[in-house]
Length: 405
DNA sequence: TCTGGGGTCCTAGGACCC
DNA sequence: TCTGGGGTCCTAGGACCC
Image (cartoon, rainbow, N blue to C red):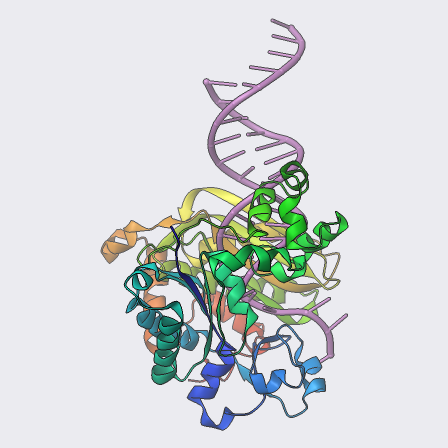
């Protein structure tokens, strides 16, 4: 039975939202980026015309376009806009699977059966997104998710590409393996496929399953099918939300450091942010991971699984710091620190009254509530105060934005 | 101012239990 | 006493996605 699957990919998403909300940025070459030692997250089409690309460093981007305007990312705003876009999709089908902040799969088989053409549905969805949010998107249409995903990449911006079932085999057979990027075939895999003499979709689809599974494990089976444009996975319903598996934060220091005070300060900040989000999601976890990238870009991760679930920033910090002690004394300067908590479960206890919580949880919750109401870091726990003492907030570029409010 | 930040999944080896 | 195997959990690293 033929299905009609859409992949809708928002064009230059973060940059377009910034241009919609600030008229002064419209028609200008802008990039959305982070703070400190950062790279381009999204470039507007005006900036792309100069050769500015995602993942470029800011100085590099400026070389291409000297009058480039950098805008600091405001993720809350982008999430908010995503929810509005999802609402539009839900008017067409309940099978809306969120693939990323700017991409969704939609199963519109039922509308096609009722006589609407895929193209007309796509035009209507694009019109609504434009009318209501002034944003453009590319729509890829195919008989399954893999085909829809590749179709969406074929025309940008403001694209609309439909690949019919009868055309799938021919199109996929003629594609180079590098063009499968985005459907689970990244740079490393396509490179290894090439080394095996498999350069096109046709060659991969005709390769022996034994060869593919020998070199790629379980991915081998998937590769052979994907290279033919075959995929039977269904589009999930919007209500079937995937449970969160881990929550974490990482940050590249403004400059490499040997200073343990700076390391401790950053770890506290990261644990504070991680804990805050963990509690906001009403979760608790028991595996704490530490990620360190050294100045020479070498990196390692360490994790520890506790016998009980934790959720306070302090408990996360205690474990993360213990992990860090395992690499002391430092042999190289630290470039990046990351903390995450996994093995998470829903934390029912939080629905109980305050009196059920121990003092530390009560404090953490109260701080979170106040910060939610009045802005991040309005109320500071001791760890943030210590971080502040060592100048970490300033180094993070946070001073003035939060502390002085 | 060379190289961000948020995730997920897979693998291989070791510990431990039956 | 020696040897083997299955299952599960954990760790560290790598690949992938946007």
